[in-house]
Amino acid sequence: MARKKSSTNTKIKEGRGLGHGKGYKPFLRVGDVPSLGKSSRPKGWKTERTHQLLSSLELNYFYVLEWAPGVVDVREQFPLPLEETLEIAKRLGIKHSADNATGESFIMTTDFLVDEVIDGKTILKARSIKPASELGSKRVLEKLEIERTYWADRGVDWGLVTDQDIPMALSKNVEWVHDSLLPEVPEDLLCQIETALFAELEERADMPLSKLALKVDRDLGMKPGLALSVVRHLIASRQWLVDMNQLILTDKPLSVTRNFSDIALA
Image (cartoon, rainbow, N blue to C red; front, side):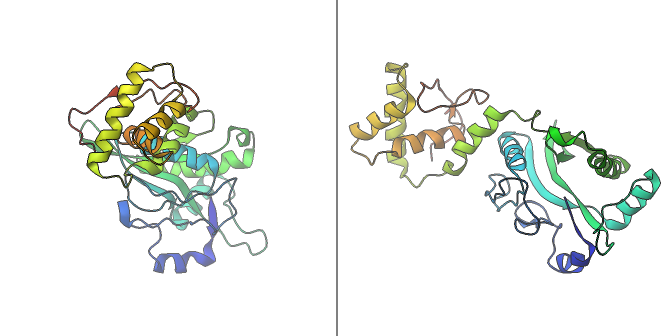
């Protein structure tokens, strides 16, 4: 993504592109530029802040990052210093992105800057997100090369992620459970519902998940839908282990393993 140079001073004053974790402020926000598909503002599990995602593809990849246990921070729409990208473009003999009407250069951004802990060390990774269908464009590849070179000059692992690289079943599963990490259910009731759900899963392994959850709602005298919300919470908090690379369908049975060894229910 890119943005006009004329807006840089305002963004700098706002502290955009600075900070880590909850305090990070994306350089671009939903509404600053036309979105490519569905723009989104999900609240991150890892950062506890609202993320600014400008396309459906960015959202899909974001959910993959949310599930990855080693990822500890996600910074989206990260700005690259204009002076440096201009120098790189000149060095490579590539035209820098600019406004056709005014000639003002755009600020380039990297879609995701990720902190991942590997073998006890925090590794910085930069990731650009593009539909595979756009990679036939010479201009797209030129802009990606400027970005790749910027991170290579810093010894940072840069990679290109396309729709063909994203495990969509995993992404969709995380999306399904994402807003159910902490349901407002008392701990004793949560334990009661979990016990009833797991007992039904063991006894009725062939029953579709939605029907099984509704049965638990009826048996416990609860509002319809509560048991299914608890299922989502249990998966999100990894208290129930399921194959996240197989799409979870509520009209199909669900295979679950308990994981309460060192995780509290609430």
